[in-house]
Image (cartoon, rainbow, N blue to C red; front, side):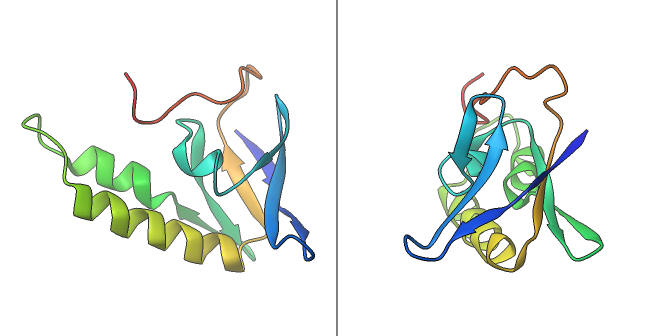
Length: 100
């Protein structure tokens, strides 16, 4: 596991982290990446809401409303966050959470 500091660009209102692929948007990449395990706010790690929702799905399908809610929760956490928790110890880079 590694901790990636969130870098804010106030002019563009953009949050980025230094990924294996280089600087990437937290909202566009981390939110949809299988390696994202959560958001650090101060000294507390909050698990990625998307991961929690995906684990709760039954084999019968997905729930779009639950995923949308998880995405909104993720954005709220990032707004207050200081770093991202990433399990990409092999430096593979982005891997989609939704394609298997």
